[in-house]
Image (cartoon, rainbow, N blue to C red; front, side):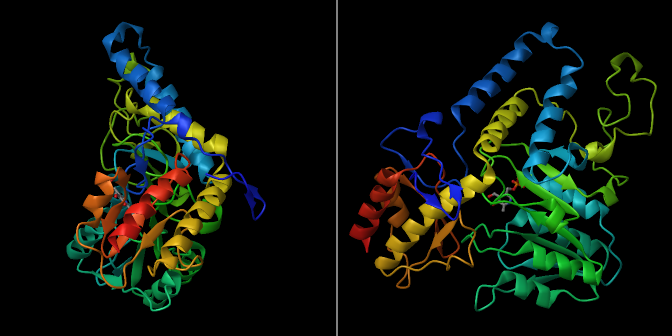
Length: 387
Ligand SMILES: Cc1ncc(COP(=O)(O)O)c(C=O)c1O
């Protein structure tokens, strides 16, 4: 990554030294699965090792690490720890939303064409169960997803369940505009922010989602099988997917757990997955979120934005296309090939140690702070020879 400044936000110098990426690997696929920072791996290994000595694990430690991590996630999106639940996956988080939104017979759920399935299947189930339907918004000609989504919202809409960055090509959805339309029509807004959170600023105070879910293992640089969901205060009395003991009031008193109670820990904690303490993964997630908080999402976004824009310009000079800067999330690039993708291109790239992924008709190029100009040169060496 460069060290020049752009639009006021100082660039972050490249951070490859914090990861374990061999020089011959050009890993440009954060949208698939990010490499774990070394600090997170060390923290996760230490967490796993604790299970070898359970006599050293005090009951209060079932709460401390997960509470700290909940708070870190909250501060990334302008929320408080009270609004955050720990989940194992996006599917689980969207499941919480689908179990709690109001939905009457004949109502609709608005989704976008080709959005990630974790934010599709729960809505198909709900619509089928309640005799409603799912409305799929096609891509608009000028790439303005917010305008297209708003056009699909009407008095029948119960839920708008969308991403803010399309997982195929980085298409950007202006959530604030969609949120206004949701409120005007009494619809709930449910966001899957997995392909942007950590790399693109998002403030729940401005977006006002009802639920917002993110996995940890992409732009949050954390471990697989852990995520978080923001639950707006209006739903804090809602129905969790599981009836956990650890989500109950006074759960810290292990000796008293036989005094069953129907009251919960405050805020969104009732929605936490069972065994939310997760002694192996939680410390790794905490270390990753600390790294992100230290860099600052504004600076990450500005740095990755400059980096992807340079890649986009080089791709265009080869006759390839990508969404214009105002229509794509700044950290995310989907490159398209007007004459079709050359046969075997992904294989040629991985043979040269260059890792990208193909989703739909796009070749996703999604760098992070561990990438540098040498990685990009390697990508273009293969592209130029294949075209
Ligand atoms: C936008 C988006 N949401 C969610 C996921 C993962 O979902 P889950 O945690 O349900 O496996 C992915 C994985 O690629 C994704 O791209």
